[in-house]
Image (cartoon, rainbow, N blue to C red; front, side):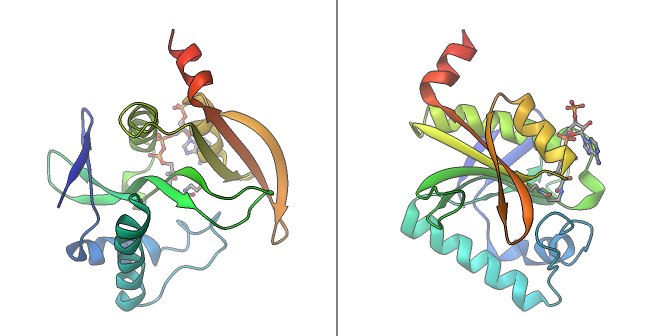
Length: 180
Ligand SMILES: CC(C)(COP(=O)(O)OP(=O)(O)OC[C@H]1O[C@@H](n2cnc3c(N)ncnc32)[C@H](O)[C@@H]1OP(=O)(O)O)[C@@H](O)C(=O)NCCC(=O)NCCS
């Protein structure tokens, strides 16, 4: 299992099968899925299927969301990081999407922001991405705040399956200028 990033309070590592119960706790919670299409999962098998799909992305695309672990306790808290998105959304495809999802008890402590800042830096430096994208439902206040706070630029709004979404992005050049 590879550790990719370390922040003050957190580790970001590859997702593993042992995360299945944490994934189930997170993804069976209707509140977690409020701005994710309202489709919480109902079985452990579905959580395992999700982990399997991300493990497959590591192999096929060289990247996928990473588990976030609390350093102090070793507990699985959720996931964060990049997905290489090949679906067409907002007229775009083949881009690195930055995302995050946490078990509810970890919300409101700055963890998502902490992982997003670390991911952005890692994406533009070590991974040498040319552009990083973020997409959030207009109604998902926390997610829009995070994407704005870390410096992504809102480019436009679009509808997907009847839901209003905001499309954010940042190029490596724009990031470099903002870092100065
Ligand atoms: C979105 C999510 C990852 C945020 O995680 P978090 O660790 O609580 O986020 P942070 O603590 O870093 O807070 C981010 C900012 O949003 C604000 N915020 C958090 N929840 C909020 C809410 N319900 N309403 C308004 N602002 C909120 C915080 O004050 C903070 O702003 P600040 O840094 O300017 O003070 C978490 O709520 C979650 O897992 N939601 C379900 C999955 C999801 O929606 N993912 C995003 C899909 S685009």
